Image (cartoon, rainbow, N blue to C red; front, side, top):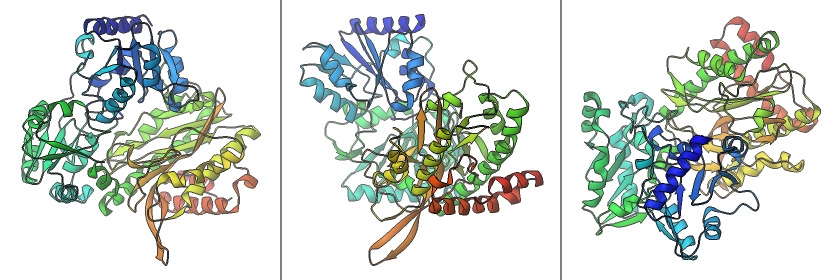
Length: 592
């Protein structure tokens, strides 16, 4: 706690030296990443809170952290005694950041932020709101360049090329498609800022960000040329030769600023909610920005046949590892001392048997009992619960394989359950199945489907506050857009070839948490008088525990779906398992 107080003091000294009355510290990096390299974990360094989402605001007399419902319980524990107040973003009565600043600062105040890690849209929104109170925003400073001693360096690990049999499309072909979209928007070029978009467009992968196989780089693509801005030590001879063959020049990472200043064309496409504000300060004054959603995101979201085949192979390997874990788990808990971290280690060990396994796609959430009520709980050596043969273990996990990325959640009963736990489990499962069974017309977005997953909880006066589904990258980020399934409006339509998670849940503080998740793929269903209709098919291959199910709540349609799903799971996994594992799987997939 003394360390956090000291760091807040250093921040306030910086503010005094630069005539700032407040400073906004976001969680992002220059590429608007969800997960960031260590050198950009400034909000975590300042506050001690290590969740992937959150914003700290420091004034001369106070400090607050805004974060969403996934992290409220974890943040409350992390911030205790630091002098930083938790602001439950999205909760009734919680002011937005600009509203809070207007209430706590006087007219003429100046609010600082780092324009290299805040998006154009963020800075504009804050500036517009604060201007009404006579407060000015200064986006020109990075305090952590001065106050963060021994700050980690920008990653220097080497990039590597994805085999074409895994990608299914060459970089040359992808850039040609991108240029067609730029021409449709009358854009002479585009600055690609998102790391997963750069990785997908170039068919490069790396190890610069934990869990996300990306490289730190920008890319500028115009009608006639393409340049990758990446530190040269990351590009070995084979990668350099590959890029030249694909028509891509390379330049040092930081030279992107000079390239923007000298940009010779009339227009450039920028994504305002993903492009950092510093780009506008550097951009050639004769160049006109065209603000638009990134066409690369939409292209990347629709998987080709090679990527879909890779997903299927990755999900098969994940399913094999999960069955081995499930077979081991309950007997181990009954016979010996097993902790949450033991579950994580055991599963990772099973995954390593697959030659395509490269690591985790996010930190494993192995949450027992009341820990599962913390949506993004992560066991540590200091907080590592022992498992007992009663209650639920929530296991949310995923792997990075060279041909796909996995994301799965199972809520596993370890023994005796209460009636309430069984009822809640069944309602969550029925919501999961209701969404999985959806058939919907072309043009439907995830927001229109979200209620299918929540309806059975709503009937019981229950709900969850996180989204129901997100896209999943192909050996890339486990969270990708532009499509999502959630209550608030996400207009990107669901299209065949898109992957999307299906993960309703329920969380009761200090008691238990439940979540059931499969990764799905959007497929064609039918076409007729009323146009095209799509469906969702599961990519995840793993049994869902049937022991907690109350049949009267589940319903006949959901029961039939679950039995069909389990039949598919058995057929796909059983040829790859030992005889005793097949017997376990047969029982786990038994029709109900």
